[in-house]
View 1 (cartoon, rainbow, N blue to C red):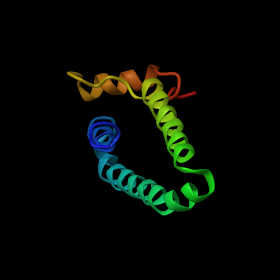
View 2: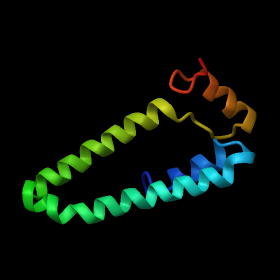
View 3: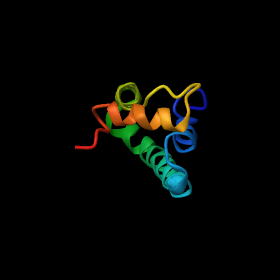
View 4: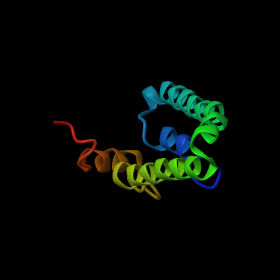
Amino acid sequence: YSASFGPLTWLLTSELFPTDIRGRALGISTIVTYLCASLVTSTFLSMETYLGAANVFALYGLITLAGIAFVLVAIPETGNKSAEEIHELLQHMWLWENN
């Protein structure tokens, strides 16, 4: 987790959100992260009983692949870019376009 999606929450709030909403965005991102973690933790054993361990891990694997696809489509590369450049990148990505 720490080598994959874990740090993404903190990266998104620190680089993508404007300064005026960054604190609220960090709070919401933290809540969503902990809710998802508690959902996985609270449902794993019952899902394992009904589906079997292999199927539960396959399901989690599919969810992870969907997450990777979302990151590839919706999150721009932010390395060595200013806040203005990141904002410009987001404006031109089809998922975030303002219609």
